[in-house]
Length: 288
Image (cartoon, rainbow, N blue to C red; front, side, top):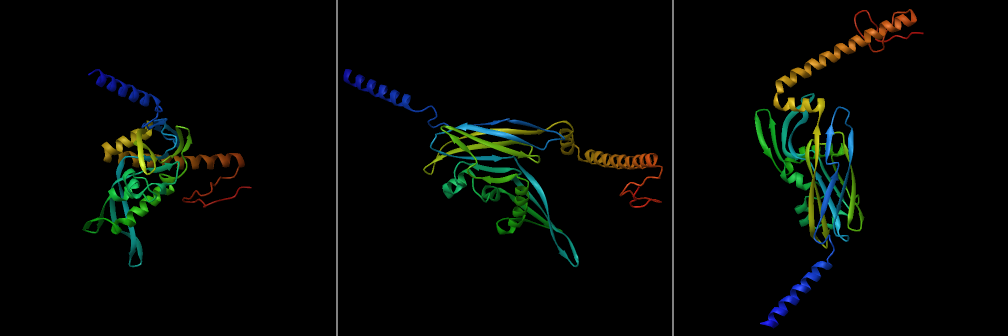
């Protein structure tokens, strides 16, 4: 009996010693974003976000930044007789406006299975496989998949890439021991809502661990009011938009008239503002 107790005690001591000898990061991946909340106002033109974290020092880091899925309307143009016009309309459902991939190593190191599991690949297959496309042409509607919907998805993803909303940046993640660092430049057109940051630590074709963090991009002030109004009361929002456009037009007209009077007062010659047209006015005039 005493022998069994001593044996169990020795095994427990050895186990505790082994656990104590493991590094603090063993099996742990952590990621944070700073700032994790971004306010979008009228003058918002983008923001730099720093993403940092910890992971086993000999692992490859793959980071995915994805905004909430949404629905997008697209028009397809074609030739009708001698005219070039819209021939069909499609609604793409469940597609993120922002899908960015960063890594400390080439993405090709990930096996096809891991690329599918993590949603990290160069062709955005994770987006393409989940998006639903409904096309309407005249009175006919149909659901597209595969090659039939490829044109719409290619056009939408290309547009997002041009605006730096979709991108793949290999070797952008820097390593320093168990630490990793990444600087992300969010564009002014960054998607609103909670974007999810997911970091994966991969070694020898196996995911050692993963961690998630969120970046909340929220409209504030006039931008927030307009967004809320558009969602909750579309007709009233449209009325306000028309009134604002009319007011802007009147303001510009008053400004041109003021400039004409100012030029006339300074030169003694009736002023003509270039580009200003109207009854009895020239398109442009030079004052010497």
